[in-house]
Length: 350
Image 1 (spheres, rainbow, N blue to C red):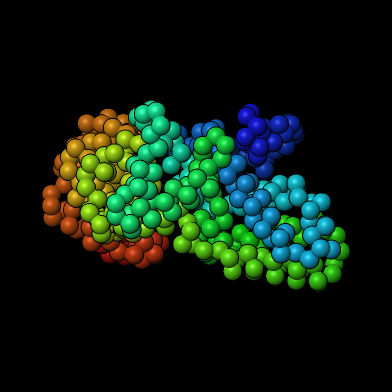
Image 2: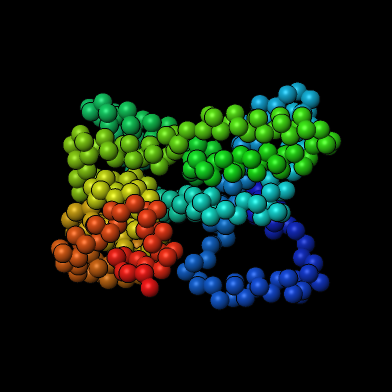
């Protein structure tokens, strides 16, 4: 197991206890795993990448909390540094849907980018990097902000990771206090002063949290600047697709389709070729741009026959696209709420 995947390596090195492996406690997990759709499974590389990102994120949060601790509490927290991630992992405390969804998004971005990497020439930094020198000041500034944000998050292997600002506000609040709680377990003594110091340090970290610095927000800001400055034309979409820049591609499609950026990402990456082609139609892309998306994304996302994907682009009538645009243009929270109540896509609730 490569050393750059520390959590996965640690898990792989754990000896299996035969008595426990055969016990009833494992049966529910085995049953779920046996009948899980193979298309939904994580690859070993995805699992290792997501585990490493999550561990690095927890370490970052813990380091930020330590900065705000008084010296007497900090000394104890420093001595327990290596145990915080393992403690949270063992408790299952990091199994939070919003957090896992963010990790999965980063893994998908990496998967697509790696599959398309061969399309770049020597010294070619990509479309976003070239926009840093754009004559439109708003585009150049937004491109610089995105390029810097991505650069800060890349590890020594060039993989895009996470920073605390990337975590949505509500989830960041939970994560900060979870980490503080895990740190408290390693500090001996019942003194309330220790709890107060940890809680206050977590709150100070949250005061510095800024969702505006999320990579997704930087990409959306650049997409809006491009749209306002000269329009996001089809050749630009095709170039981003060829480079495997799924995040920027989704942001531009969201702006062109006037839908939420998280909705555009879901349609492009999470729901298969049919919905990706629906997004292309919603964004008003021409057939060549849609074909460029299929050519770049079909293999890494397991879309199957490319010709079928193009057929899904060609088939819907304009009236169907208009109805879909109205539905997908609704707030994601409303659509989620309707789905929880048993209705979806304009269908009545029983």
